[in-house]
Length: 179
Image (cartoon, rainbow, N blue to C red; front, side, top):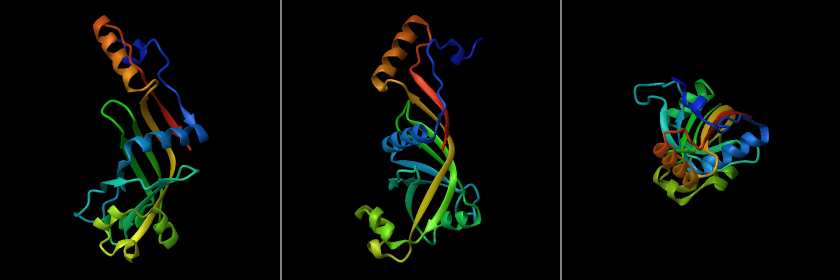
């Protein structure tokens, strides 16, 4: 039995690097908005090292910016090991991405002001001047993505035609991301 990739009549793999990788990262993060943020090294029984986080910003270099509390488990875990993993899912059948990178905790008040949104008061009850607010900057090093080549509508049509004809007509594309 052949794998689905061998049955695929179209090119379904494309590794991306540098600017192309950053553009794909930006596209998929814009769709997902949030990720599972994995520090991988829980400090206590209170955290398993994975939690949902909202990306506040992606800069020109492809760095991802988050707001976090200074007394959070993730900040404690990053202080021990800067390596993080981020898992994104933008939709049910596409827009998936996995990134590894290095996290840095920053206390720059100007950056906090730039990233602040009123909904953040849920976690920082004193508002944007809450002394517990820190910024986490994640510099991606590499990753992997799974997406559609032509968008969800075309992908769905190809899946339906493939199911009706018994042929693999998947519109997916996947590959490594190297920053």
